[in-house]
Length: 193
Figure 1 (cartoon, rainbow, N blue to C red):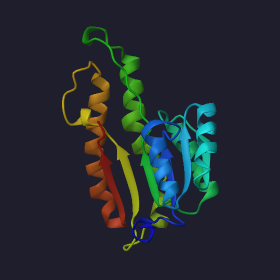
Figure 2: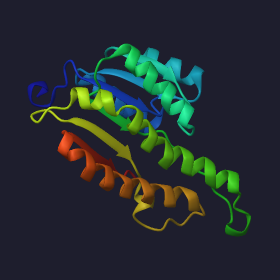
Figure 3: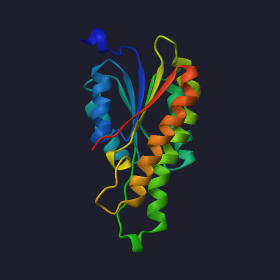
Figure 4: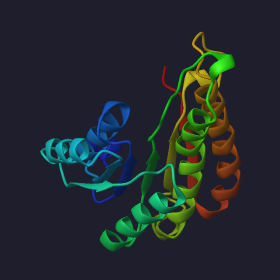
């Protein structure tokens, strides 16, 4: 099975990799033979996750706040100091905010949009040179954006910025896929939920 689905020698960055879906994805990539960098905002949780994940294979932790352009650049710089190319980028870091419509705060809206849409775009941009270095016609580089079913349907909860951001990342995925396909970089989204 690993001959069919193995990723021996490949490199992967998983954002939001300290818990939940990101941690599960990182574990799967390590099981398949990847070298993995996980990132998250909270350094203590990230370090603990990377230590546990290291039992599966080579896993490093890089703390980063991907809601800011500076955080995206810092993570990209750290990846570039470790690897000459990047095979897989999993944009999983995310935020949510719930509040009644008439009370929904601007800072809640901005936090979610910055983390869920702006972050994946600018991190992908900052890592493009490394993705291009790995991309080949027979083995393209991969960008995987983690969306949500809430980006495809209207949720029952009052999480306005979350559902809008997940719809946005789905459309951004299509746009990036169209642009980067010619460079042998595939861009796809998954929508858990």
